[in-house]
Length: 139
Image (tube, rainbow, N blue to C red; front, side):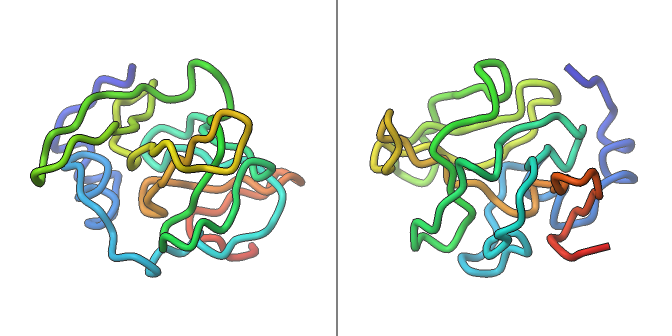
């Protein structure tokens, strides 16, 4: 786990990243920079850089957020019961820094039938050739 003060998080993250990762916010559907990213690579935590999802598990769910069928590994994300907003959902957090990523739903196409619905603001992207990018653009 990454132990940082609130002031350190605020200094390191953009306002939108802070709102999503540290305050469990949600970006508007269709607005995320990585929603339409189709490059090969690894989606990482925008807060701590931990690998979270591989591009081979990303798909277009039509939800308006990047969607994945499975995390990069068993220890990449943690799941927590979320009863906010009058709903019962499963929140997904980065296992290393506990940053809020999004939610997981049981309506995905993968072998486990899961859809990890993740905010672009909580993600970075490392292209397969090693180029890092936080907003989905080529460097």
